Length: 561
Image 1 (cartoon, rainbow, N blue to C red):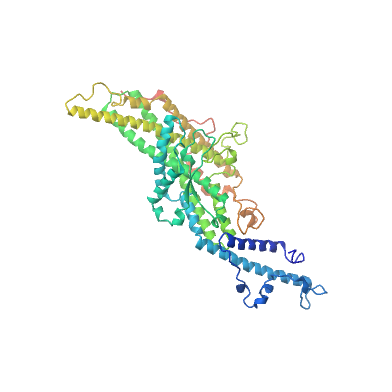
Image 2: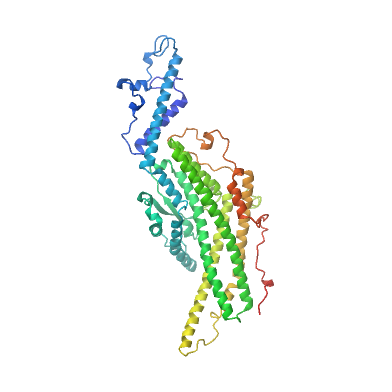
């Protein structure tokens, strides 16, 4: 403007900003879309003008030489300089608006048709937000076969669970899951972008290989304008939550199968050897009952939370985002719709914006160095920590119980297998006319099995993990109730892209002048989730340090004769 000697006031700052945004759009087309020779179609903007008058009629050049000595700018009789400047600004404003429409139309058409924007956003939901159930099921099966034996070896020799876990081995697991499910029918430009990352906490002595596993979806220009690095980080955080939840449900289903097999084996042993120690047998059965109650409580929590996240948060949010993106007329509207979609998912997923600053690692678990003392602000009252932190504690306690449950039952089933092998060997010797048993075998009559299940240390460990889960869930529900009543700071991703208006404000402040984000008190789905998690008010009123579990009263156990 200064170079062309345009007087102040001829072009407003708003018009100058719009012209700058238009220039960014043209630059985006030439650099990001790879169309270096693309130019505006001036003929469509002024079809009735001669070639020499096109740019002049569009307001390309302000020529102060045409100003007369009376101060008018190429003015007509009766018009002042202000009138001519206003007319010039109106012409330029109309030109910029029509050019912006042409640029935005070309950008969106290229992103939707040539670069498959909508397909990639759908693929992000299917893979990073675990929307494709058959793929997730096959992936969990493959990871279980790959990682759980390494975890067992690590516990046995005392090494880290990440030893021998490499990206290429996990990539083969993901590729197998893709080939064995309907995901194999997806376009190649989608499947080629799915990658595996190992993100572990360097501060951990023995990092968990499951928590280190992350799926990534590679996005480059021009799609990076929509799925920018901040959005990719939010996808990673939500994937961590959903994947840990899916892992918990998977482990609970496996341990349920183990529990069923163990119950059948114990019943057969009790019928075949009624003289086995009655006290040990009764304690073992009560332990299994306690495990079943806690497993059902965790499964109730995990299944309800998973259903809420997948159907009410992710699916509902995606439908809204897809509708807004399809109706968008500018790239900024697409970016705002996508950012709003992720912001709502993070908010409704109980993930707080400051979780990582409050001591969370890359896997979403509670970290060290967080002030949880009674005098700290966050722990000044029960359920006083952030929602994200309370949720991470519930997931941690759930995984800990699943590990204890799995190790205990696998050890018990190995004892059952050993007894079965010895019993079959004895039957074969008896058929051959030999003695089946030379002496009493405590593996065969179940004595060793019942004694191991009724071991005091195992009972205390089960009680500890079960009470830990009850306490963590009660604190989460209290924090959730308080949040729904008071409302925490809103998680918002500032919109980025070609057409940002320069204010730096989040979209809900730019559009409509709203003073703040939607109130939590109006979130009926979250309130209904809180009700479903504690529909019988079992956790209502439980406070940190005063929770009382079901327990196993071994003194009150009736002994069967």
